[in-house]
Length: 310
Image 1 (cartoon, rainbow, N blue to C red):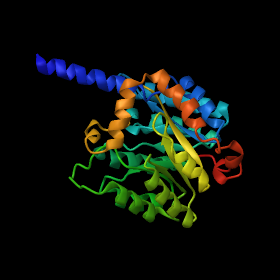
Image 2: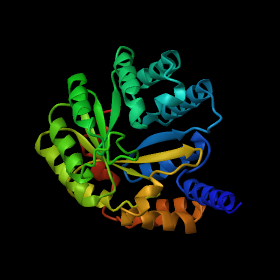
Image 3: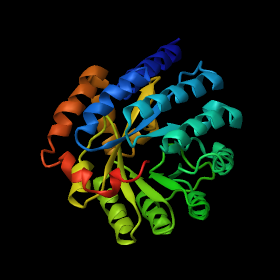
Image 4: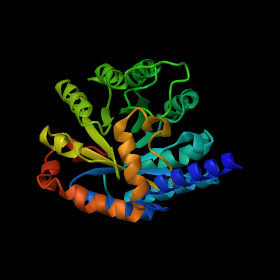
């Protein structure tokens, strides 16, 4: 009985925290937030977090709705796609790719668990025939990501580097910052572009400086609702910023197990638990963005970030 109570309590806490990370249940909710973000010259990634009950066909329909909205907005936004939620059905994916090809916007494939990666990359290769503006995601905590970086370089696609939410099942224990920078080094000058997706400001700075030195197009990607301190750093070194906007079902952007090993994650979780979704999101859009008065749209309009649809 006690175990059931504890399990229910844990599920309730996770649900409350998760709800603070989605801007709403629909694409329209995400668009409203994106318009506020656009005032600062930042571009967006729209990330649908599907409901558990959504069928692959329903998920594909939601992706198509998002792409139609992106086309109406006329922005350089990209759509983040979770292939396993499409059941790795290329017929469903092809509809999404054809819509993206029409607008030229990038489809960014998310990294899920380690076991799904080979299937994801096989679908990416197949997708290149339909739409060439694609991106993959490489987690720094996986040993295989070094090999996958070579694959991405050969394919010539866009790459998003993340610290990684899911562990390596082979037991590899890399120092994630070191591996993150090693992946950056492998990709410098060899891919279409690189998104440095981390809220670790010092790590992001080192990665972006390496990419700039190599002449590789790059951007800093930050998730809405988490600290945006890196945005000012990116402005200072002339790198565009992209904000990841999750919408749909409530979920966590970090692992509960990281609470004990990463103090920053513990701080985020505590704040997420005590601050409601509406208060948190609107506070982020108003107060947190406004803390960077030197970030002006004119700065970004003069950079290459607005010259290529991504």
